[in-house]
Amino acid sequence: MLLSASTLQPDEPPPVSPALSRNVRALGWVAFLNDTATEMSYWLLPQFLVAVLGAGPMVFGLIEGAAETVASFGRLISGFLADRLRRRKPLAAMGYTIANLAKPLLALAQSWRQVFWIRFADRAAKGFRAAPRDALIADSVPAGERGAAFGFRQAMDSAGAIAGPLSAVLLLPLFLGDVRKVFWAATVPGLASILLAWFAVREIRPAALPRSAGGAIQRSRGKDRRLLWILVAVAVFSLGNSSDLFLILRAHNLGVPPQLAPMLGLVFNTVYTLLSWPAGKLSDRIPRRILVVLGYLVYAGVYFGFAHSSSSRAVWLLMPLYGLYYALTEGVLRAWIADLVPSQSRASVFGVFNWVVGVVAFPASLVAGWLWQHYSPATPFYMSAGLSFLAALLLAFA
Image 1 (cartoon, rainbow, N blue to C red):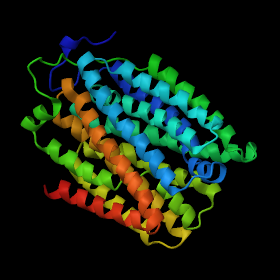
Image 2 (cartoon, one colour; image 1 turned 60 degrees about the vertical axis):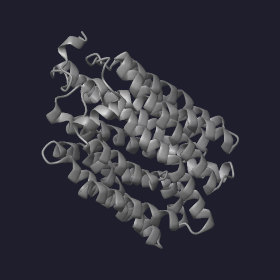
Image 3 (spheres, rainbow, N blue to C red; image 1 turned 90 degrees about the vertical axis):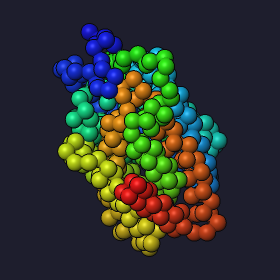
Image 4 (cartoon, rainbow, N blue to C red; image 1 turned 180 degrees about the vertical axis):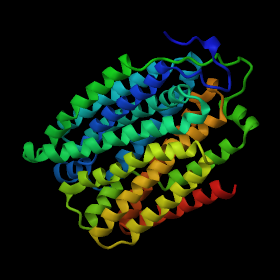
């Protein structure tokens, strides 16, 4: 039975029950299956674009930048819809459905332009589900356990990101190197995530939003200006946070064979999986800002290493650190934002946060591709390291 809106307080999540505990676990398994499907394809995409479709670095930037930008607008719209309609589950489940129906179409693509539109649909759906899902998680646990809840979801998500590349590595020889057949195989976990999203996740309705209330950001600013500092720092960081496809491309540039690209994902996501939940739990006990600042500094070090390195051995040392950055920031940052806003406007604020991240992703990836092509492969990584360091300073001293 669903909790009624009258049981909720404006600034607090609903009381904890075994059903809500199951809700968080269900969302974790949805994340696991969805990311398994995504990562089976993602780490093979650069090889597919270059070797099969004949694309180059500027195309990577265009595809990923445009995809993340449309995802950002999906996050913004779905966040406001989730708060206005007081419905989170249908919007989140719809996002998982569209994304996992679009991904298998990569197997049919005959040009990079078709890949562009497939990634466009996939990322738009990802954006559409993000804010309602995050608000649903935040409302499913008490404030003192938000870090652990978001950390658990991130751990399950990254566990899927281990299963995905590992599946790709095992399936490629079985399919005689046919990347398209791996794309088709990704349909199986994708369909399973759709079913779980619709039938295993329960709706939690927040209290109605007062008609006289101002916008989400204005209310949050009146209560705590820290949210605005977070948004500014995240925008600065995101300007240098180009698509991970550039990491794969740089790894190839430094001598890592294309067929080992899924193994890079395996190394990175193993660290991410092992540390996400502990990092989330730790953020429930110490200021979350400390972990986010540390994560940004780790990111700066990783990207400086990718820029400065000249051998493939460095790549295998840097990828675990990249997983550490994700573990310290992804779930923790969302838990921090949830601490600063009431339940009724939480999805809207998550939508604004994700919109800021996504809208800056287009110039970030496009500029990275331009710098790579017109200067050197190391140049975009130096830029990313500098912007990440600046974002860490903003959070640390603002």
